[in-house]
Length: 321
Picture 1 (cartoon, rainbow, N blue to C red):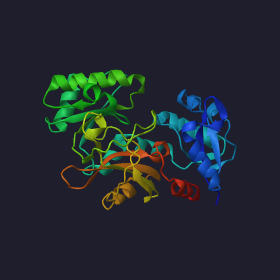
Picture 2: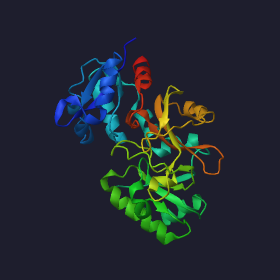
Picture 3: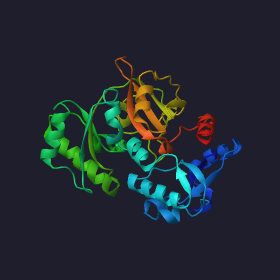
């Protein structure tokens, strides 16, 4: 059976080398005996998929991608361009959409993740007041919530464009949602999501830092400390799953030096039900001690790794898949 190769984004300043953010993964992959090829991420974003995959050998066989986040339609074009060259992404366009955007995975994880509702949007136009009122009603009509799109939040503009202190205040809902849509602009993915805010356990240890911009960092799941406005960071883990099995468990990239031991008992059956080959789940421990919650689900190809983690087992699993 052919051994999968891994595709990384090329360095924009030196297209024959991996992007510096992923260079360490490419080096580790070579040490493990794996093979990688490079793609032009800017060309993928621009919709020039055929140009973007020009460095990928023809008849390359099975392929994984490890790189910057792509809109779902751009990923579909990416998969098509590779198929024309005889390559096959092991995460299909449909599988990517399911794991990458909240409406794709929420139905499976409902009950294990903060309650959520969403409003599809056209372009950069904020939902109408009546649409927001209906969404708020579906979420229970009162209490705190956060705003995000199908993929990302504006967690660094917490009070301005992310956190709604009270859903029963329609002016506050409209204000935060409008500002969120304005700041997302052309990068708004799919629509506007309202998620119930939940309190998670915190540790005021001062560790961590922001994850790389553009990588799916799992933001927007309801964690208080992601605002930067609370004391400490959530006790949060990122789990990497391949074919329904956890192949790497580590801290969230926002707090890469933390030790975490999440309980995966209730999560694994949900991951298997979702049916996507390679995903991540971000888990946070509830402040009331009632257990771990799924904060976010993401496609494993575009989920960032915390600095300093040993990813050899993860990469070895991918090239053995």
